Image 1 (cartoon, rainbow, N blue to C red):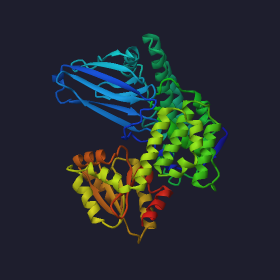
Image 2 (cartoon, rainbow, N blue to C red):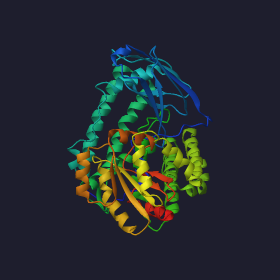
Image 3 (cartoon, rainbow, N blue to C red):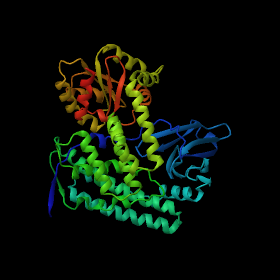
Image 4 (spheres, one colour):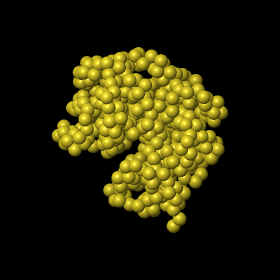
Length: 489
């Protein structure tokens, strides 16, 4: 079989988009959004007396979650009112799970705590949501592209394995359609769900393959020439009428792989690199929703790097190629908010830290700030069970060595972990710095207050004690991290 050699590099700004959700600011710009209402009624509340509220999560193209919550009233009712820009799936917890909503919909959900497997939908999207609920809670919902055995597979073996799983799952999806005759949008959503899961698995595996085999430099990975053939016509593979939000993670994985396979010029500056990537994405993809999401996400990732210049310099490219308000409005709002934060970090920092007031995590964070007053602080939030967290520790050690003698302190805060495992990990890693362990309550408070929804998560504090930046993009392996630190020293 003909093979090609691909230089495998981790592209932090792209891969960091693959996070298990995070809270996003509520959108106040009502342009092109339509008020959407979801109401519910719960019977037999006494069956689960500790269930006091429902939450609703809306994921946008950046992978960001906006979360709403409403308490269950004495009569069993709850209600959500929110803006929606495009038909998509949203998630209601507990019990309900994913449902489909369109802008302007009025949806009612009937729940019986004594019969939680029998959820009743009425109002708009009644047939669609009844069908979707059946699919997600039935024998037809078959997915399993990863298991313990797949970690030991070669790339060509994994491709064949995924092809066989997709064939099985496609057949199950067709059986579901034949038996239940769901609406067109549920048929499209379930088809996309299978395709997205299949492509996500195949796109992620080369990175996993390199990690498992300790290719720490990721210099060369031998990829079968036909491995990526499943990406042909990717921009026309998905529905434009209903968004399956799993596509947002696929989009980030795809862009990472696309950049690795197509951009070989190492002499380009950061601005030139991303401009070239944007132009290639535009020229080589069909003009549709998927391409708009690719371009929008690229701009979002640059903003995650605090790169306002890329946004302003390429605003015409964005305006010419991204027309969906569900993409443009969050981007524009994010740019405006980021500009304010950069120009006045004290206000944003104080607002963030105020969320810790009177919580179990307040004293820990206060003590770290007090101990390192007048110094730059680089904080690493990690967990003992988090492989990517521990994989970054050698890079953190290298970063610390590069900044030896500088006025900076490295702080490592372990969350959501067993204390014995934390102590064992410290003895194994032999990593200098200030180490702190958070119990369950502290971990919960810190996660919520600091919007930590995926780890590893990093935070950069200036000498005045203001949070300058936070997120997974500040990984020690990212060359831009040391540049950002040096500007604060």
